[in-house]
Amino acid sequence: MGKILTKNDKEIIDFFNRIQDLKKILKSLKTDQLRSLQNEQYITDSELAEKLKLSKRTLSEYRCTGILPYYQIGKKILYKESDIEELLAKNRTNIFGTHFN
Image (cartoon, rainbow, N blue to C red; front, side):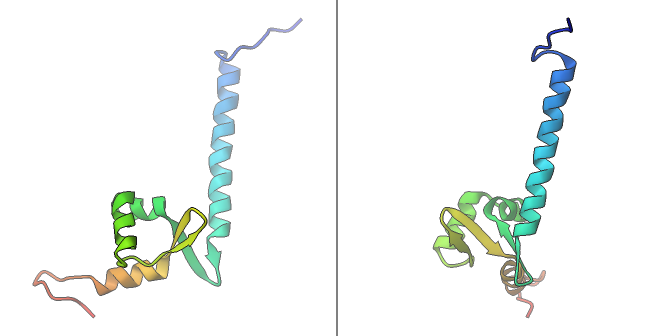
């Protein structure tokens, strides 16, 4: 008879670590494939918060006050990257406090 493996055996731990790695890869592939629509790229609330170094709460406030354009499908919030880039460009300020156009 062979050895009975338990959750503490290296083989089992390695197996589950590989499963987690595959899960991450599949999730990123799925996200990349679904985000492009009519040559536009969309990002999620979490991704935008990370890119802009803002909290999700701050993004929520910006949405509620009309500062930040967004799309909501069910409970999912999406942002069009070109809208975000345009917003950032309009609000860019140089060292003398004037806006660039």
